[in-house]
Image (cartoon, rainbow, N blue to C red; front, side):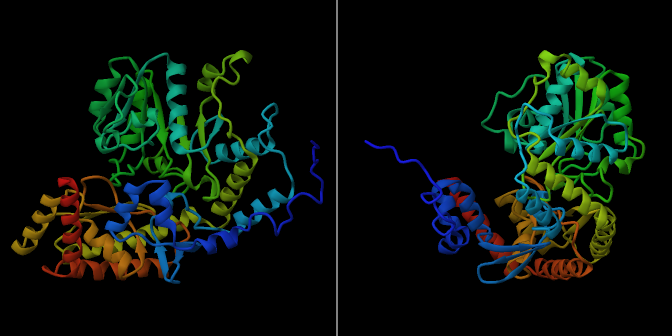
Length: 478
């Protein structure tokens, strides 16, 4: 028996190795077959039921193209990940430069340079003094970090969160989820996690007076439903937490990084002093999972209180150099292209135009927005025929009605949107911050057309939604 040592000549050449382009082309269009067989057949059935079973093959800025070459306006942006748009050329350039450097990553027994530089940049953009940064792989992991920090720093057990809150789906973050649709089947959760109404200072103080609260975790704009707090709520909530010895944790995973027209959405409420801020999504421009948790120095020193505890909270992929390079590039693009200012300007353009439609359309109840984080809410109409259609849809399924807008927006107008949560009549827009005025007009024209069709009963929009409702009822009966 002889041992063959690998030599330069025995290694696969580039042609013999993986040809990714050929692999994609070979299997083009098999997305849903493969997903159904290997990943999540229930989700495949859902996408096919509502007609979202497209196969996308190209992406640039706010646009996607499918296998037929149809161009789509993506107003979902990967749940807000692609704030810079998809495949931003400047971030790609930086990442190619990084790969060409053969630069080390995740040595672990070292102090990485790029994470220090990114932490420095993030701290400069905070509205208050936050001294230390921990890098995560996701927003949910950032919330997990914040929970641990809060309990360790205060010595208290309880974490407060809001009704309708969404902070992630890992066990700690799920324990703070305000929607039972996500929690069903996964109990028991972390102990001492208590839910209070959103935007209710009296309820917050009632819980804080119990003196067992480590922290209050809140989204400055709730992702589910796009609920915006009253002026002063966040500022007063932070002050109440400080008064009662609890931490104020600002979950900016979806609302942060410029989406609302400020770097942090909490800045809309004036001089707010959060103890911990959690970021993710747009932080890498969508190229690699990364998040960041910023906190005050005294909190950090409670957690990492000695050399023996210097790695008491850690993560294998934290501070990966590729992710840090992406984060530095994303911040550079955000600033140089003035995307924070663009988010405010384009959000106001769309929001005010939709608001102007409300008197013309019975189903249109309200639009809520901060920059390019937008929720369009439908409500029960006054005319008898439309009221009957509204009641029928809600009898079939409480989440069904918004599909009457979302499906034709996709099928007829090639615009991607989503329902803003379970059992609510709200559609949500999270456009990339790079959208143009022409893109805004594309959506506004399409949405107006969809509203016109929705107000014709019976009509094609209702036929599609009725068919979906019947399929939902049939599946439930099985």
